[in-house]
Length: 412
Image (cartoon, rainbow, N blue to C red; front, side, top):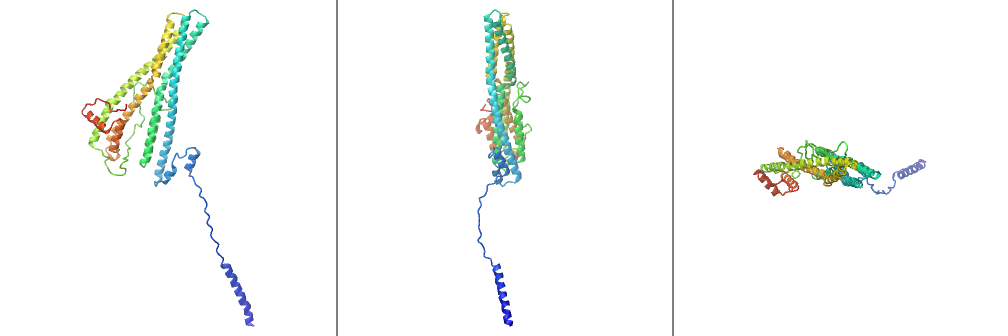
């Protein structure tokens, strides 16, 4: 009986055991590996560049790939931002230069046509003789044309469109030069915050030297004294880096002989080139002042003479002769672009003055590590003067022996 009673219990236990085992041993399902395509992600700087139309303006990916710290990346981005501003200024100055060159051509032709038409009317009125409406119409037309030409000449002589156009040409060239310098700095060395500050100062100095607007910011076209143009910061200090041996202790190849050679070059630049351009600039400035006064004065006299045509024999002679002289003066002043010549002399004088200051600042610095490499510096000076290295050294020897009979520059 006991065995009979135990059988169901054993059977029940086995059944439970089977159930438990069935619950524990679950067959493993095969793993599925899904490969989803990666979506390219753009960072915020690249997205803003594409949205604003400046594709690849700031190479953010290039900067991120570099193994520099975050401060270096920020400095590099700042320099690229300055490059964008400089490129925009290059385009603006080029457009303004073209516009003001058109001003000079159009105003020159228009004023001369007005003067010649007024002189013709005054001559016709004198030969017609008599009185009446035809004579009055010719006299009035001639007087009005002369008066309008006088007013236009006063404005044109004040702003000097040819000089304005030359200013913008020089600004375009100098901004392109600065753009190239910043690109070289980014490519060769690791820029610092001091480099950013220096470039910013150069941009602002160029903005001040060559302003875009006319009203309130235009440069004085008839100063009391001719002075070379200044487009660099006046408080500039020596911040040259030794690109060839960066991070190494060296003397940059400088020697006492090279320093003496550079001092002699400075003497030649100051005695010959700068002095000559200042002399020519003062002469051109005096000529331009005389022409700027003579043109409106002659057209004013011609207007008075045309108003009295028919009242005497001298009136038509004055009207026609003064008009012819005014047209000649205007053609010589603006057709010959005397204002442009003055600005060219200002720019050339500033070029030599900047070269002189650069050499002097380099020689004053006694820490050789802060000086530019000797070979590179000497090559730059020779190229700026349009000479080979041997010609540059020969010029220094002539200056030392006081036998200089030529200018330092062979370019201009």
